[in-house]
Image 1 (cartoon, rainbow, N blue to C red):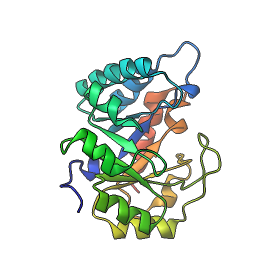
Image 2: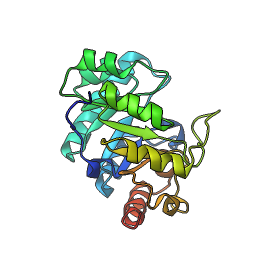
Image 3: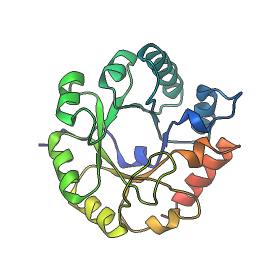
Image 4: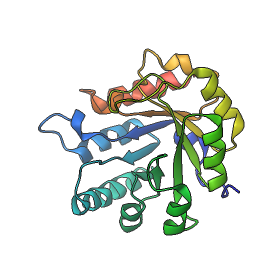
Length: 215
């Protein structure tokens, strides 16, 4: 049975997923995130695959405080323990990561837990396990992950119709292909390189938000 919804669809509109590999040498992650928050991103996920725990936690606390000033939830990728210690809003767990049930057991009822799904069966299973939202892709491939399979529009639409929790599309989403998602039923999009690789991150986020008004 899914837990009572703790995240609204409008909060999923523009979901910024961090990737420091796209930053310029002189650029700090917090600086980049703040530019995006100023532009109006609605959700932030801190994603660190290589960082040591102490650095990850310090960074999570810094971003949690920053996001709080803008009234935006901070989600931690993969690590419920870091999310709990940092006081983040929640955690996102993928299919190969710690399970949704285990994350819920560790964090309790008040934290947001996001899950990944690539088909209707996985989506329903994640919702039944207690996920508060789903990240689904890769809708247009990926510049940050290798060996990802494409998620067809028809399957994405079917996922959205099969669950009652918000669904966000992820994977290679750019301004020039965003319109192809029109009518699929997603609450929003998760963007990595389209935001963090941009020279002017504030303008990039504003452009995504404007384009999302017609999707």
